[in-house]
Amino acid sequence: MNQILDQDQSFSQELSRDFFKNVYGYMFGALLVSGIIAYMAGNEEFALKYFFTETGATPFYYIVVFAPLGLGLLIQMAYKRLSLGILLLAFLGYAVLMGLALSTILLMYSVQSVAVTFFITAAAFGAMAVLGYTTKTDLTKMGSLLYMAFIGIFIAGMVNWFIGSEMIDYIISIVGVFVFTGLTAYYMQQLKGTSQDTTLSGVDRNKLALVGGLMLYILFINLFMSLLRLLGRD
Image (cartoon, rainbow, N blue to C red; front, side, top):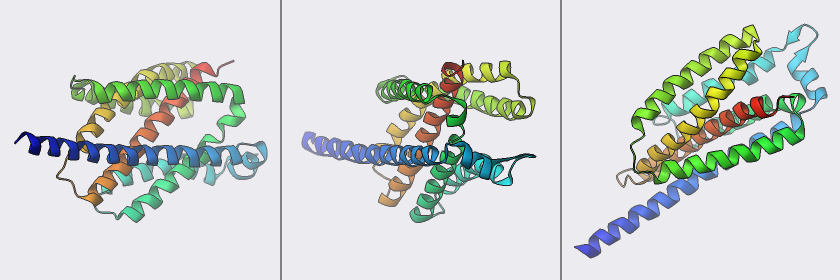
C-alpha cells in the first residue's frame, strides 16, 4: 500500500513539474517576444509613422492598445473549445501586440529606469510566486478581493485615460503594486492545485498551462508598469 502511495505521489510530482515547466515556458516566451518587439519599435520614427499623427493617435494605435484585452478574454474564456494551435496563435498575437504597446515606454522613460524596474519586478514577482506555491494558507478569499480591486483599477485607468490626472495615475500605481503582487501569490496557489490534478488529459493540461502562462505574463507586465510609473518618475 505504501509503495502504491509513493508511486502515485511521485507521478503527481512529475506531472506538476512538467506543468510548471510549460507554464513558465509560455510566460518567458511571451516576455521575450514582447521585449524584442518593444525594442525594435521603441523609437520616435516608428511611433510617428504608425501610432501618432499631427491630429492625434492613429486607428492602429487603438488596435494595439485594446486588442490584447479581447485576445486575453478569448484565451481565458474559450480555451476549452479552441484547439491548442489556435490558442498558441492567439497567445503569440497577444505577446506581439503587447510588445508594440510597451514600445512607447521607451520614449517616456530612460533605459536605466526600465532596466532597474524590470529587475525589481522580477524579484518581487519571484518572491510572491514562491510564497503562493509554498504557503499552506488558503488565499481564495484574498484572491476574490484582489480581483475586485483589479476591476476597480481597470475602470479607474480607463477613466483616467481621458482625464489625464497625474494624481489618479499615482494612486492607481500604488494600489496596483499591492494588487498584482497579491494576485501573483493567489494565482500560483491555484496553478499548484491544477498541476496536481491527475484526472486532466494531456491536451487539457497543455491548454491550462498556456492559460496559466498568459495570466502570469499579464500579472508581471501590470506589476512592471505600476512600478515603472512610481520609480521612473523624474
